[in-house]
Image (cartoon, rainbow, N blue to C red; front, top):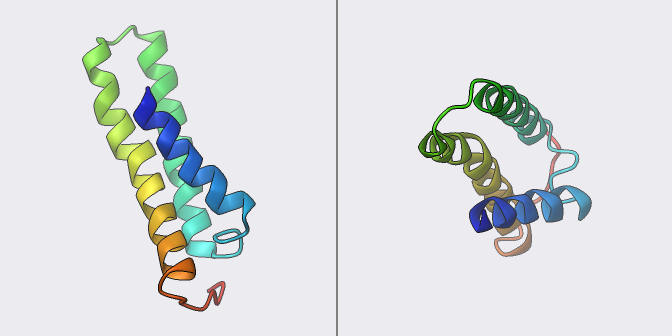
Length: 86
């Protein structure tokens, strides 16, 4: 649960600080990952999968999204890479 909250915070900070808001490839990846994760989570709930099946979903969709967002934040604020917006 704490892992999902930390990942959510990276996504939230990245989007609402405007750091990745206009980077089209990052936004497309976020949309695809969150949609896929939402569909599989709904399937997880509806089919009553075992709780051990939840961690691969968190790793594949939530942590991947957070790592992309963290790398964008790191690149923009630490390495001072220019945000071209693709």
